[in-house]
Image 1 (cartoon, rainbow, N blue to C red):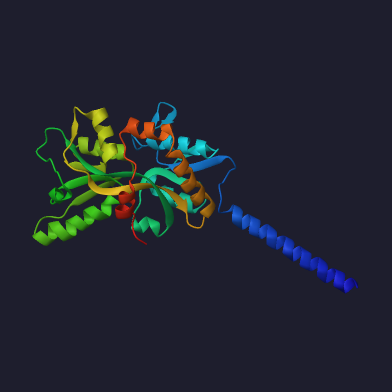
Image 2 (image 1 turned 120 degrees about the vertical axis):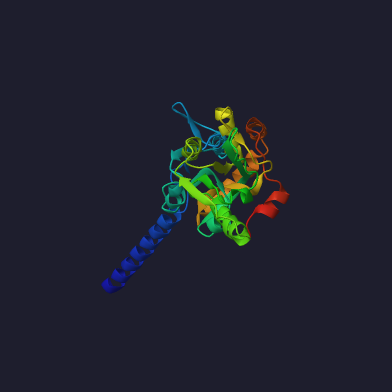
Length: 278
Protein backbone atom coordinates (compact mmCIF):
# COMPACT_ATOMS: atom_id res chain seq x y z
CA UNK A 1 0.00 0.00 0.00
CA UNK A 2 2.83 2.41 0.95
CA UNK A 3 4.58 1.55 -2.29
CA UNK A 4 1.43 2.40 -4.25
CA UNK A 5 1.03 5.71 -2.42
CA UNK A 6 4.66 6.57 -3.08
CA UNK A 7 4.26 5.87 -6.82
CA UNK A 8 1.05 7.91 -6.92
CA UNK A 9 2.78 10.83 -5.17
CA UNK A 10 5.65 10.73 -7.66
CA UNK A 11 3.16 10.64 -10.53
CA UNK A 12 1.29 13.67 -9.18
CA UNK A 13 4.56 15.55 -8.72
CA UNK A 14 5.61 14.64 -12.25
CA UNK A 15 2.33 15.91 -13.68
CA UNK A 16 2.55 19.07 -11.56
CA UNK A 17 6.07 19.87 -12.71
CA UNK A 18 5.04 19.10 -16.28
CA UNK A 19 2.16 21.59 -16.06
CA UNK A 20 4.40 24.23 -14.50
CA UNK A 21 6.94 23.69 -17.29
CA UNK A 22 4.20 24.05 -19.90
CA UNK A 23 3.01 27.31 -18.33
CA UNK A 24 6.55 28.68 -18.17
CA UNK A 25 7.11 27.64 -21.78
CA UNK A 26 3.87 29.36 -22.83
CA UNK A 27 4.73 32.51 -20.92
CA UNK A 28 8.07 32.66 -22.69
CA UNK A 29 6.13 33.24 -25.88
CA UNK A 30 3.65 35.92 -24.80
CA UNK A 31 3.81 39.58 -23.77
CA UNK A 32 6.64 40.30 -21.35
CA UNK A 33 4.44 42.32 -19.00
CA UNK A 34 0.64 42.26 -18.58
CA UNK A 35 -1.02 45.38 -19.94
CA UNK A 36 2.03 46.52 -21.91
CA UNK A 37 3.54 46.19 -25.38
CA UNK A 38 7.29 46.55 -24.92
CA UNK A 39 9.01 47.50 -28.16
CA UNK A 40 12.60 47.91 -29.28
CA UNK A 41 12.94 51.13 -31.27
CA UNK A 42 15.96 52.98 -32.67
CA UNK A 43 14.84 56.46 -31.66
CA UNK A 44 17.16 58.35 -34.03
CA UNK A 45 15.10 57.94 -37.19
CA UNK A 46 13.09 61.14 -37.79
CA UNK A 47 10.17 61.28 -38.54
CA UNK A 48 9.43 57.65 -37.55
CA UNK A 49 10.94 57.74 -34.06
CA UNK A 50 13.05 60.46 -32.48
CA UNK A 51 13.44 62.52 -29.34
CA UNK A 52 11.62 65.85 -29.12
CA UNK A 53 13.37 67.31 -26.10
CA UNK A 54 12.92 64.66 -23.42
CA UNK A 55 9.87 63.12 -25.10
CA UNK A 56 9.72 60.25 -27.59
CA UNK A 57 7.98 61.35 -30.79
CA UNK A 58 7.29 60.33 -34.37
CA UNK A 59 4.94 58.24 -36.45
CA UNK A 60 5.93 54.83 -35.07
CA UNK A 61 5.72 56.09 -31.48
CA UNK A 62 2.23 57.52 -32.02
CA UNK A 63 1.11 54.57 -34.12
CA UNK A 64 2.04 51.99 -31.50
CA UNK A 65 0.40 54.09 -28.79
CA UNK A 66 -2.85 54.14 -30.77
CA UNK A 67 -2.61 50.43 -31.52
CA UNK A 68 -1.90 49.58 -27.89
CA UNK A 69 -4.89 51.66 -26.80
CA UNK A 70 -7.40 49.67 -28.86
CA UNK A 71 -5.77 46.50 -27.51
CA UNK A 72 -6.27 47.71 -23.94
CA UNK A 73 -2.52 48.05 -23.37
CA UNK A 74 0.18 50.66 -22.87
CA UNK A 75 3.07 51.03 -25.31
CA UNK A 76 6.67 51.20 -24.04
CA UNK A 77 9.51 51.91 -26.48
CA UNK A 78 13.06 50.97 -25.43
CA UNK A 79 15.66 53.01 -27.32
CA UNK A 80 17.91 50.43 -29.00
CA UNK A 81 20.44 50.88 -31.77
CA UNK A 82 19.41 49.36 -35.08
CA UNK A 83 21.94 46.52 -35.15
CA UNK A 84 20.69 45.29 -31.76
CA UNK A 85 16.96 45.26 -32.52
CA UNK A 86 16.59 41.74 -33.93
CA UNK A 87 19.04 40.15 -31.45
CA UNK A 88 17.17 41.88 -28.62
CA UNK A 89 13.83 40.65 -29.91
CA UNK A 90 15.05 37.08 -30.28
CA UNK A 91 16.58 37.26 -26.82
CA UNK A 92 13.26 38.26 -25.26
CA UNK A 93 14.25 41.81 -24.30
CA UNK A 94 11.05 43.16 -25.86
CA UNK A 95 7.79 41.91 -27.38
CA UNK A 96 8.20 43.52 -30.80
CA UNK A 97 10.41 45.78 -32.88
CA UNK A 98 8.85 49.15 -33.64
CA UNK A 99 11.36 50.92 -35.85
CA UNK A 100 10.05 51.24 -39.41
CA UNK A 101 11.78 47.96 -40.22
CA UNK A 102 11.48 46.83 -43.83
CA UNK A 103 10.08 43.36 -44.39
CA UNK A 104 12.64 41.30 -46.30
CA UNK A 105 13.05 37.62 -47.09
CA UNK A 106 16.23 37.50 -45.01
CA UNK A 107 14.54 38.96 -41.94
CA UNK A 108 11.60 36.59 -42.28
CA UNK A 109 14.04 33.71 -41.87
CA UNK A 110 14.76 34.76 -38.28
CA UNK A 111 11.67 36.69 -37.12
CA UNK A 112 8.01 37.06 -38.06
CA UNK A 113 6.86 40.44 -39.37
CA UNK A 114 3.46 42.11 -39.54
CA UNK A 115 3.04 44.85 -42.20
CA UNK A 116 1.51 48.21 -41.31
CA UNK A 117 2.99 50.73 -43.78
CA UNK A 118 4.29 51.11 -47.33
CA UNK A 119 7.60 52.87 -47.89
CA UNK A 120 10.76 52.94 -50.01
CA UNK A 121 14.01 54.86 -50.42
CA UNK A 122 15.22 58.23 -51.64
CA UNK A 123 18.66 59.65 -52.42
CA UNK A 124 19.90 62.80 -50.71
CA UNK A 125 22.74 64.96 -52.02
CA UNK A 126 24.38 68.23 -51.04
CA UNK A 127 22.48 71.13 -52.55
CA UNK A 128 24.35 72.67 -55.47
CA UNK A 129 26.91 69.86 -55.76
CA UNK A 130 27.86 68.42 -59.15
CA UNK A 131 26.81 64.92 -58.06
CA UNK A 132 23.01 64.63 -58.15
CA UNK A 133 22.23 60.89 -58.49
CA UNK A 134 18.68 60.01 -59.45
CA UNK A 135 18.89 56.21 -59.31
CA UNK A 136 21.30 53.74 -57.63
CA UNK A 137 22.95 53.05 -60.99
CA UNK A 138 24.31 56.61 -60.80
CA UNK A 139 26.38 55.58 -57.77
CA UNK A 140 28.99 53.75 -59.86
CA UNK A 141 32.46 55.06 -59.00
CA UNK A 142 31.15 57.19 -56.13
CA UNK A 143 31.11 56.98 -52.33
CA UNK A 144 27.68 56.68 -50.77
CA UNK A 145 26.63 56.80 -47.11
CA UNK A 146 24.00 54.69 -45.36
CA UNK A 147 22.92 53.69 -41.89
CA UNK A 148 24.31 50.25 -41.13
CA UNK A 149 22.15 47.13 -41.13
CA UNK A 150 19.58 48.44 -43.60
CA UNK A 151 17.95 46.27 -46.25
CA UNK A 152 18.99 48.45 -49.19
CA UNK A 153 22.70 47.79 -48.61
CA UNK A 154 22.29 44.40 -50.23
CA UNK A 155 20.47 46.01 -53.16
CA UNK A 156 23.22 48.58 -53.62
CA UNK A 157 25.85 45.84 -53.57
CA UNK A 158 23.91 44.02 -56.29
CA UNK A 159 23.84 47.18 -58.41
CA UNK A 160 27.58 47.61 -57.90
CA UNK A 161 28.36 44.05 -59.00
CA UNK A 162 25.72 43.37 -61.64
CA UNK A 163 25.53 46.82 -63.22
CA UNK A 164 28.61 48.91 -62.46
CA UNK A 165 31.33 46.28 -62.68
CA UNK A 166 29.48 44.26 -65.32
CA UNK A 167 29.54 47.34 -67.55
CA UNK A 168 33.20 48.17 -66.95
CA UNK A 169 32.43 50.96 -64.47
CA UNK A 170 34.00 51.53 -61.07
CA UNK A 171 32.19 49.82 -58.15
CA UNK A 172 30.14 51.68 -55.56
CA UNK A 173 31.89 52.46 -52.28
CA UNK A 174 29.46 52.33 -49.36
CA UNK A 175 30.31 53.74 -45.94
CA UNK A 176 28.04 52.70 -43.08
CA UNK A 177 27.22 54.69 -39.95
CA UNK A 178 25.40 53.72 -36.73
CA UNK A 179 22.56 56.23 -37.21
CA UNK A 180 20.94 58.12 -40.05
CA UNK A 181 21.83 61.60 -38.69
CA UNK A 182 25.49 60.54 -38.54
CA UNK A 183 25.25 59.55 -42.20
CA UNK A 184 23.88 62.98 -43.12
CA UNK A 185 26.68 64.68 -41.20
CA UNK A 186 29.21 62.52 -43.03
CA UNK A 187 27.79 63.77 -46.32
CA UNK A 188 27.89 67.39 -45.18
CA UNK A 189 31.53 66.95 -44.17
CA UNK A 190 32.33 65.42 -47.59
CA UNK A 191 33.12 61.96 -46.21
CA UNK A 192 30.51 60.61 -48.66
CA UNK A 193 29.04 62.14 -51.80
CA UNK A 194 25.40 61.14 -51.33
CA UNK A 195 23.13 59.35 -48.88
CA UNK A 196 20.47 56.71 -49.44
CA UNK A 197 17.76 56.41 -46.82
CA UNK A 198 14.07 55.83 -46.24
CA UNK A 199 11.91 58.23 -48.27
CA UNK A 200 10.11 59.65 -45.23
CA UNK A 201 13.41 60.09 -43.40
CA UNK A 202 14.75 61.93 -46.45
CA UNK A 203 11.78 64.31 -46.34
CA UNK A 204 12.53 64.88 -42.67
CA UNK A 205 16.15 65.73 -43.43
CA UNK A 206 15.00 68.29 -46.00
CA UNK A 207 12.60 69.76 -43.43
CA UNK A 208 15.50 70.31 -41.04
CA UNK A 209 18.39 71.03 -43.44
CA UNK A 210 16.66 72.15 -46.63
CA UNK A 211 19.11 74.97 -47.25
CA UNK A 212 22.03 72.52 -47.38
CA UNK A 213 20.68 69.28 -48.86
CA UNK A 214 18.13 68.11 -51.40
CA UNK A 215 16.44 64.93 -52.61
CA UNK A 216 18.03 64.16 -55.96
CA UNK A 217 16.05 60.98 -56.77
CA UNK A 218 12.78 61.60 -58.61
CA UNK A 219 10.81 58.42 -57.85
CA UNK A 220 10.32 56.09 -54.89
CA UNK A 221 13.15 53.54 -54.99
CA UNK A 222 12.66 49.90 -54.01
CA UNK A 223 9.04 50.06 -52.72
CA UNK A 224 8.72 47.95 -49.59
CA UNK A 225 6.52 47.16 -46.60
CA UNK A 226 7.35 48.31 -43.08
CA UNK A 227 6.46 45.87 -40.32
CA UNK A 228 6.53 45.08 -36.63
CA UNK A 229 8.98 42.30 -35.81
CA UNK A 230 7.80 39.44 -33.57
CA UNK A 231 9.85 36.56 -32.20
CA UNK A 232 9.23 33.34 -34.13
CA UNK A 233 6.88 31.08 -32.19
CA UNK A 234 5.33 33.94 -30.25
CA UNK A 235 1.91 33.39 -31.78
CA UNK A 236 0.07 35.11 -28.94
CA UNK A 237 1.74 38.46 -29.64
CA UNK A 238 1.56 37.99 -33.40
CA UNK A 239 -2.16 37.23 -33.43
CA UNK A 240 -2.93 40.00 -30.94
CA UNK A 241 -1.15 42.53 -33.17
CA UNK A 242 -2.95 41.34 -36.31
CA UNK A 243 -6.34 41.63 -34.60
CA UNK A 244 -5.38 44.96 -33.04
CA UNK A 245 -4.28 46.42 -36.39
CA UNK A 246 -7.57 45.39 -37.96
CA UNK A 247 -9.45 47.18 -35.19
CA UNK A 248 -7.17 50.25 -35.16
CA UNK A 249 -7.41 50.69 -38.95
CA UNK A 250 -11.14 51.39 -38.60
CA UNK A 251 -10.69 54.32 -36.22
CA UNK A 252 -10.52 58.06 -37.07
CA UNK A 253 -7.22 58.23 -35.17
CA UNK A 254 -5.63 55.82 -37.65
CA UNK A 255 -6.60 57.92 -40.69
CA UNK A 256 -5.60 61.16 -38.94
CA UNK A 257 -2.15 59.78 -38.12
CA UNK A 258 -1.46 58.73 -41.71
CA UNK A 259 -2.62 62.12 -42.93
CA UNK A 260 -0.49 63.96 -40.36
CA UNK A 261 2.71 62.29 -41.57
CA UNK A 262 1.67 61.93 -45.22
CA UNK A 263 2.22 58.18 -45.03
CA UNK A 264 0.52 55.42 -46.97
CA UNK A 265 -1.12 52.30 -45.59
CA UNK A 266 -0.48 49.20 -47.73
CA UNK A 267 -3.30 48.14 -50.01
CA UNK A 268 -4.28 44.54 -50.64
CA UNK A 269 -2.36 44.77 -53.92
CA UNK A 270 0.73 46.09 -52.09
CA UNK A 271 0.58 43.19 -49.66
CA UNK A 272 0.32 40.72 -52.52
CA UNK A 273 3.17 42.23 -54.55
CA UNK A 274 5.60 43.40 -51.84
CA UNK A 275 5.32 40.78 -49.09
CA UNK A 276 8.25 38.38 -49.58
CA UNK A 277 7.14 34.87 -50.43
CA UNK A 278 8.32 32.21 -48.02
